[in-house]
Length: 318
Ligand SMILES: [Zn+2]
Image 1 (cartoon, helix red, strand yellow):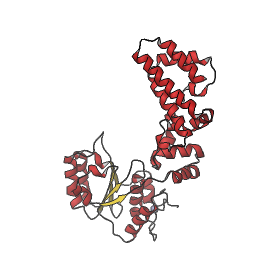
Image 2: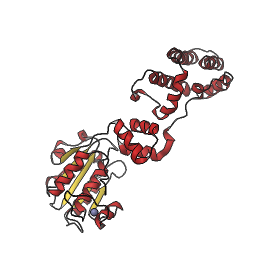
Image 3: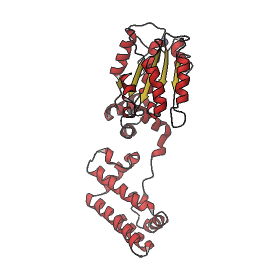
Image 4: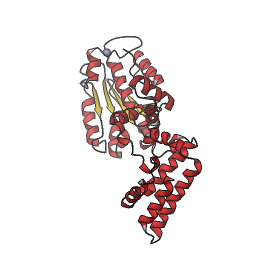
């Protein structure tokens, strides 16, 4: 079976080496942004330890009983401890301490994966420290966090720390295209918005286009007659006027080849890119000024809002 881990090659090799030489530490701390792959690698590490196929270097065969049990979430020696509500609670840590003293049931070691450990209060963390100081030889604790600074220095120093890095946008884009059959343009957008974290990109992909916002009609239409209807819309939804500025600003950024992280409506990137060629730089600057002026006029004077908005829309559609 092909190594199922995407990226993190160095970490995977290090863990294989650890298992091969039977120098598994009692506690690990996986550090990296949300969705970067910490949990996937932690589960993979457990499988490396459990897998019954005794290969060198160790592999995750995916077919033996141990591997299949992990994949179906039924391995008795692997346990996930996740925050209940917003916190990892002291009760959960105490429960862990009660269980950890027993020998593993099927594997050589028991593996505990604690997610989001930055969400422990001081009481829970101090309680966990006792186990980190003297972990039973037959157990491995893997702590996952996106914020190492939230942890006590003593917690950090008791663990072997592995740092997970996001993937370069280009690499993640290629993976999304090649392994997940995502269309290239969508893959680029996903890779950018996920900040190189593959888990985030895949979650977004699953959610579909729910994050995509409707590009305001006024950016797309050239029909002058639409001005009155659009003016009505802005009158009924005064907030959208402020937002309209952000859309024009995005177009301006795109036109100037600014970095994508400046784009506000990144989920509509594709559509915005198709609109950009219709605008000159000057026209975009004027549009932004027009919207600002109109907004200020309506907010600060007793001008007729409907009229002001109609004039604005006519100008924007010119
Ligand atoms: Zn296996």
